[in-house]
Length: 437
Image 1 (cartoon, rainbow, N blue to C red):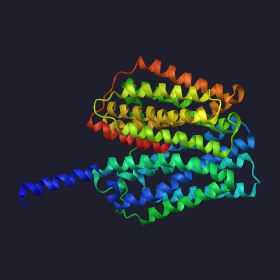
Image 2 (cartoon, rainbow, N blue to C red; image 1 turned 90 degrees about the vertical axis):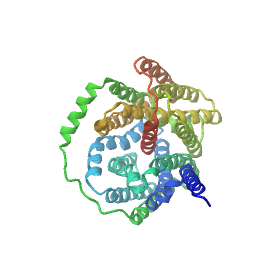
Image 3 (tube, helix red, strand yellow; image 1 turned 135 degrees about the vertical axis):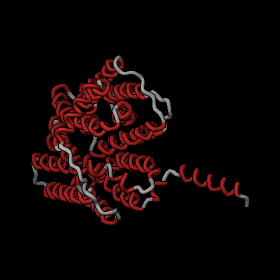
Image 4 (tube, helix red, strand yellow; image 1 turned 60 degrees about the vertical axis):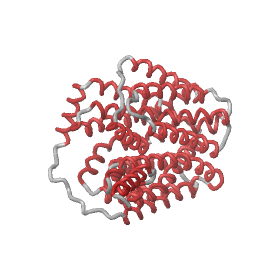
C-alpha cells in the first residue's frame, strides 16, 4: 500500500474518531464518573419531586411550596462564593466525597422521617436547608471535575455535551419514576433510592485515578478580586444589562416550577403520577433544547435566540395556565422545558464573548449570585401570589411578564454572533446551567 493511501486511511480514522458521539468515554476516569453521576442524577430528581409532593400534600399551601424551594436554594446562594474558594484551594475529589456522603445522610434522614409518618413540615424544610448548604460546596467542585477527568483535551466539548445529555435524561426519567414510586410505595422509598444512588458516585470517586493534588501557591485576597470585578462591571454596561435581564427572569418568570404540584393535584385533580409526568415532560423539552443549542452554527445571532426563547417561554406558560386538563398541558410543558434552558445559556455565552479573559471567572460568579439569589426569592413570591390569586392566574402573569421583558430588553441588546471559539463556550455554558437546574 502506498504512503499516500496510508495517510488518507489514518486521516479517515481520525475524522471518524472525532465524529464519535461517545469518544469522551475513552477516558477511564470520565467514564467512571459519568456512570456514578448517571445513577445519582436520577435519584436526585426523584427526591426533588418527592419533597415538593410531600410538602404540598401535607399543607395544601402554594406558599409552603415556595418556602420549600427557598429553603434549599437560598443557602446555596449564600455560601456559593465560599464554595468556589474552597473548590479552588483544596482537592476537589475529597470535597466531593464529603459532600456526597453528607447528601446520602440527608436522604436517609428524609426516608426515616417519612417512613415513620411522624414528621412536621419544618423538619423537611430544615433538611432542605442542610442540602442547600452541601450543594454550595458540591457544585463548584463537581463542575470543573470534567476538565480534570478528561486526559485528551480534544474530548472536553464532547464530555460536556454528554454530561448535559445525562442530566437532561435524568430530568426526564427521575420525576416520572418518582411519581410511580410515590403513588405505589410512598415518599420514603424515593428518598431511600436516592440515598442508595449516592453510593454509585462515591464508588466512582474512589476508583478514579488522579495525580496528587498540588495546593495553589499564591492565595489572593478575595475582597480585592471582588472589588476589581465590581469596577469592571461598571465599565461594561452591556454585561450589566444582561445580568439585570437574568435577574428579572429569575425573580418573575423561571420559578414557574414551584406551581406545578398545585396544577397536578388541585387544577388537574391528579396524583403523584400526574406531577411526575408533567415534570418529565418539562425534562423532555429540556433535551430538545439541548439538542437545538448543540446544533447552532457559526454566525448565529445569539441575542435573537435569547429574546425569542423568552417569548416562546412566555407563550408556553400562558398556554399551560389556561389548559383545562392534564393531557392538554403536556405539549405546553414540553415547550416550557425547551424554552426555559436557552435564555440563561445564551446570556452566559454572550457575556463570555464580551468579558475580558482575565475577568471572566469573576463576572461569572456575579451572574451566578444574581441568578441563583433571585430564583429562591422568586419561588417565595410565586407561592405567595398563587395563594392569593390562584396558580393559573399566577402562571398567566409569569408568561405575560416574560413577553414584556423580551420586548423591553430588545431595545438595549445588539446582535451577537457565534464564532468557532464561542461554540465551545456555548457548550460549557449549557453544561453549567443544566447542572444547576
